Amino acid sequence: MPPKPHRILLDRVSVYADEAAAFMRRRRIARRPFARLYYPHGRSADHAQDSSSGAELFVAAGRLIEVAGRKEKG
Amino acid sequence: MIQEARARVTPGIFADMPDAAATAAPDRESAEAALAFLTEMSPDLRGAAILGPEGEVLAATGEEPGRWREDAAALFAAADGAEGVPVEQVHIATEQGEVFAIRNAGLAALTVTDRFALASLMLFDMRSTLRQLASPNFGGSEPPKSRSGD
Image 1: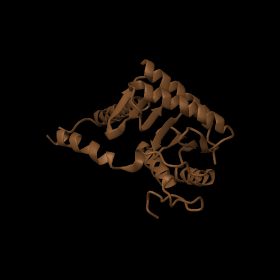
Image 2: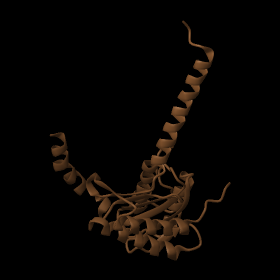
Image 3: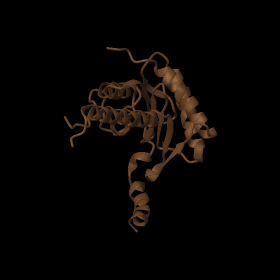
């Protein structure tokens, strides 16, 4: 027996909602601030914002962002 | 196995590369030409500076070159102090923008970009700009080679 039309609609809406939730989840992860340092021979290390070294890096980066200023919209 | 071999061989390969060696500082005109080219190549870029071997500003965007020197020194001090080892590259992403810093051939470059700039391309452009700038053949009138090869 074919599914009722409203079931198809509900399923479709729920698929879109799942996709949107996954997109928001990925976006939240991607937008998280990070500080990554690269050392000789290809090694890299992440420093969390709440660690003492990470906090210093974020403060220094904030100052540089301030110096660079906003981009003029062309 | 492969990782062990790579760890054994890689330091030797990089030790032969001249990038880490300090060279004579290029003149300001060349640095400004290189910075202009870097700015033109990177649409996400908000501001940038090129520093000499002593941390002096060779070229910078904006009105406050002195602040670039101070803030770059603070950034490298914080980065070097994180593990007590000098860093080669720094990438910090915040809500307000992203900061990239790189040391190459005794020079340093710093850029501030919008969020979600392509990190590998940005670092590649910065590194190639510094390499070109440090090469003895680089003149102020000749821009560094573009990554697309045109």
